[in-house]
Image (cartoon, rainbow, N blue to C red):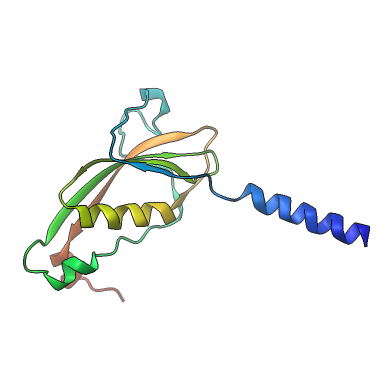
Length: 137
């Protein structure tokens, strides 16, 4: 019985190590030192995605699709060594609804781990014409 309890506790401890850290989301731009970027030459480069994001067209925009069909959101993303996002800072956005959709997707994304915490810029582009031209299979 003691061995079984020890195995269960070890499993719980190992699982707890995989729990993502608390995520900070804000609209206050922060500019980390250049050495903290994944690629200091191209700050939009990012580690390989392990769990890919899916940008969803905001529901409210679908109802009034004729009004705004294109939008962009630029987010500065900081990930920890395990690849979980720890800080998301919205740098620019054409619409609050696009911002919300981009942040929801980035929260669910996981990148390949690195030897240290890294940052990169992420640009989410929303174009309703592309969705209509290339529907999901």
